[in-house]
Image (cartoon, rainbow, N blue to C red):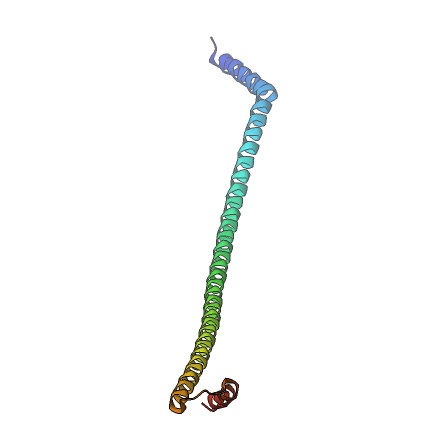
Amino acid sequence: MNINLTLIGQSITFAVFVWFCMKFIWPHIVHALDVRRKAIADGLAAAERGKHEQELAAKRATETLHDSKVKAAEIIAQAEKRAVQIIEEAKATAKAEGDRQLAAAQAEIEQAAHRAREQLRSQVAALVLAGAEKVLRREVDAKAHADLLEAISKEI
C-alpha cells in the first residue's frame, strides 16, 4: 500500500465528511445553539425585569407602610384630641350640673328659711297675742290685732 494514496483517500473522505457535516448537521447545531442562546438571553432579561419589579414592589411596600404609619399616627392624634375634647365637655357638663344643683339647693334653702321665718313670725305673733291677752285679761278684737300683728311682723 502506498502511503500517499492512503493519505489522499483519507483526505478526500475527511473533506466529504466535513462537507456532509457542514451541509446537513451544522445548521441544526447552529440553530439549536441560537435557540438556546435566545432562551438564555430571554431568561436573563426576565430575571432582570423580575429583579427590577421586585425592587419597585419593595419600594411601593415601604412607601405604603410609611403612609400607613403616618395615617395611623394622625388617627391616634385625632383620637387623643377627641378624647381630651370629650373629657373637657364632660367636665363642663358636670360643672354646669353641679352649679344647677347648687343653685337649686340654695333656692330650696332660701325657701325653707323663708318658711321658717314666716312660721316664727306667726308663732311670735301668737305668743305676743297670748301674752297681751293675759296681761290685759280681757277679750281682744282678733281682726284689729291681726292687722296690728301683721304690721309688726312686717317690721320684724
